[in-house]
Length: 272
Image (cartoon, rainbow, N blue to C red):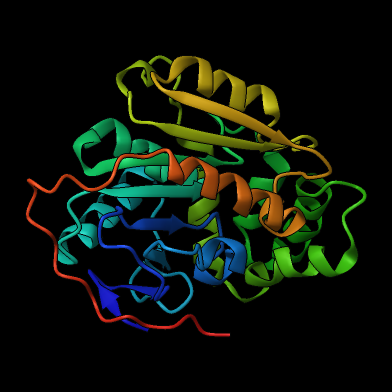
């Protein structure tokens, strides 16, 4: 996989040079492979799926704050000379891209927030379990109970949990510490970037009410609630999610021709 700012990433070869790149940021304990093919290979779009520091194939130490991950991502974009991009994040990744939208709004052409909330009300026991290597299996078990729609097939549940079984203990501990510390209440009005917010109808970690709160406080947002899905709607309803994202992207403005075009990195097919 190619690397920028010590962040490994996979890139889709489908691209229109007049459209901004789409950068995917995974959730807690995840990596670039957490994203379904329906999103990783959006027809006509340059899509880059990152492994945050310490995750997947990326080296470095995992962070313990959303702000640190945000600055890692900004440096990643700068090293690739991407001036403006559509940033799409799931769960923890949604908090990271929302932080970047607050601090550096000129770097975003659009904002995608999946399973997002202004603040995560995670069960304290879940955070405790992921903070101790000996209790991580209990954390994964509890996460499964909270993160999926009860009707989700077992195969999809296994796919959604796969990265948690391979993530380093320090990654899980740091991510969940970061997850419980962020709070965007009272600051969202500064963000006027076109935003697409999607929630699973049965999400218990970031319920649809949180998505509606985000939409009502951002300056230019739409919200969609997808039925028969929980917090892990990436694996529960990938087709519906991909169609919705494609519709949002089609409404965005093309890259401003007055801006110098950033050099493109080599086109690297996704693994698997």
